[in-house]
Length: 312
Image 1 (spheres, rainbow, N blue to C red):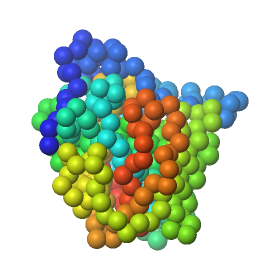
Image 2 (image 1 turned 90 degrees about the vertical axis):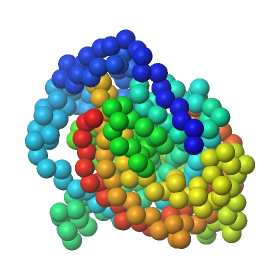
Image 3 (image 1 turned 135 degrees about the horizontal axis):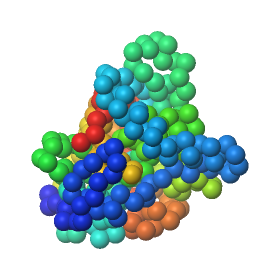
Image 4 (image 1 turned 90 degrees about the horizontal axis):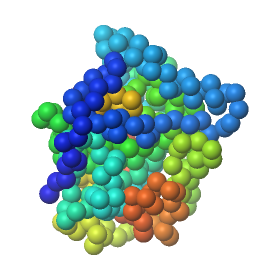
């Protein structure tokens, strides 16, 4: 598989509290900032809270000296929607030095949406059932290599993460660098009569918009657009599912955050889906060229764990 690497030759800059060589001031521009979907005093307070750099630096300094608290959930109805997009349309989303998997000037982009089942600390054991079960959507590219020869086997690049629950959206902004999340004003992800419907509406917030309806099919055929990347439906599903690390660019900080995850998908249980129509796309997806009907499939259920997180 060919690769693409964003241009690492940029003007050097340093950000207080989080220095890293080889990144420009433009690279550090906040392009994934959090905006609460409801206006008013509460929204203004939360926006200021999650953007407080003093608080974030204190949290990084404290948590770097503490063991990571493993998180767990039993997720269900994981619906994958994948497009082939032009590298030239997504280059601005790729941190310097990060290499994406690509073929002939194109790369893969996936939106996967699912329902958690009591997402909380694994150490809680049976008491984890008291934690909520939010909806979540991860938007990602697939990584070939990272700066500094950091191992990158089965790693994705997160560019958007959306929750329906403010506790998790705000909590991940405050306590995680690897999952800079957004809060949707309205978020639905439902299964009915072998159809799976997803709707994400940002409202006045920073979450991207998305809507898609897909249904179960017996056909396990690989779309022509994905043929340069894979030789079969099975090889495509295996690659897209079995990713066990995630990176994201840390806002206002010239660093990458890396999270190790455990997602032991049973490939034999994966169900093919067909998109019933071209999904309604918001501005973000239109800008990166995620158009047309995506390659879709569903993972009925899988145990999910976040094992570690660190700054690279």
